Figure 1 (cartoon, one colour):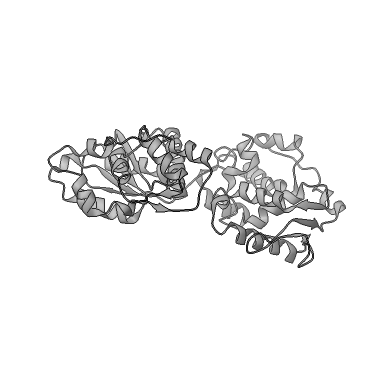
Figure 2 (cartoon, one colour):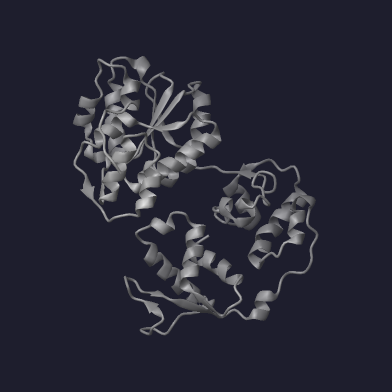
Length: 361
């Protein structure tokens, strides 16, 4: 669903004619976890407001009046006025027979959007109670004629409340894009690298490692893609008969990288993978490199994100970020990586164990 669609769903449950735009923005954020931190958030919200007005769903404040927030570009409305008649909003389809797995629907105050979601699922369960599970986009196309209709179904309130099951009701399963991973050697470990430059440098170094039995898997992935695709590596391990005992991650030392690491660590735990741990040897050396300045971030959020790292790396990263600086992986280029990873020493401990460096946060 688009931000405008999330706003429309939120508006359908309101009773007041005038609704604060901050509430609509929160509804859009709740529907898309990446929107709240996107540098384009304000532009996206402005576009969604224009869509609602163009569709006749809301009336925006008079242009140039006091109903607009001009603190940044583009301006955003402070409120919107709903135009959908209350009588039309109150109308709902007549009673229907729900199949037993969806019996809960008969006892809930469902919105029209909820009914539009559940009705095709109900029909499918009635007609195909033992349907073979398929990827979510395939089921979405079958039920709604739109392969993206269920793209965010895992975040739907009926799913998060434990009422609607993707497995049992939709007879479907997620099919994220696979994690890009390369089997460089037989060792039972995998290192995931966030940035393509660092991945390329490490791949070239590890491809020339003199003792091939010390080299394992190298993977490339970051952000939402990493979190979504991490579980796909299990099938690859099985296909290659090459499981792992150690799973390491190397991201930028910035807020996004560390928050992504925490989400990926939780996903790895849920999937039964080995604990996802920081590649502390790489991080500790990255912390010796010149940082770059960025806009400041919330101190509590920084401390929470840095907690994924072991001490004293967490304290060093916390201090770095709270003073408005970050370290991207490009700050530790291939020549420095070659100096760090010494062929005369075992490889995995060099990736996993940090060098000593202390700080306070």
